[in-house]
Structures are given as C-alpha cells and as structure tokens.
Image (cartoon, rainbow, N blue to C red; front, top):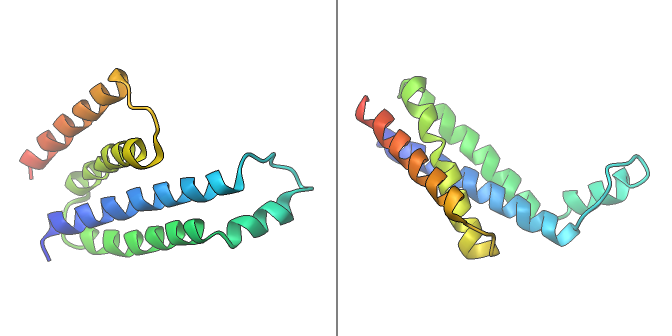
Length: 122
C-alpha cells in the first residue's frame, strides 16, 4: 500500500477518534474529577459507544502507524500527523457546530503550507 495513503488513513482514524471521544463526553457532560464520582463517571465512560469507538480508532491508528514507520522516515511521516488538526477542526465545525474563526483558519492554512513543504522534501 502507498505510504502516503497509510499516513492519511492514520490521520483520519485519529481525527475520528477525537470526534467520537468528544461526542461521548458531550453525552456524559461536565464532571469534577473526584474520588467520589470516579466509579459512576468511569462506568459511563466505559459503556459509552462513541468513546469505545474512539478508542478503537486509536488502536487501529497505532497499528497503521507502525506500518508507516516500517516504510517511511519518521522525520517525513510525523509532520504529516499535523493534518489531523486540519481534519479535526473542519469536522468539528461541520459536524459538532464548533466555531472556526479567522485565527483558526489562518492556522489551518499555515499547517497545510508546512505539510506541503515537508512532503516536497521526501
């Protein structure tokens, strides 16, 4: 399989994991990290399908990343992971209704330029 396709698969899995974890935590809601609520909140987290799905995405992304590292220099592959910031921000905007103001958009453009520059050195 093409190494760039593997990298992008890993990036998408990481972005999906973040979004699923966020959805799961939105359903659980705000909580204080105390010993008294560790069990009830822990049980909610452990039985939340979006959180379980997010964790599964992370596990699969680690396996994909190991394949990537067996084929590509880490100094080229790892900067590509920053594409996850772009994907996650855009998906959160469209799917979760999060804000995407001018500063975030400028940051996304800078990330894309940086990834493009790194990819040209491969």
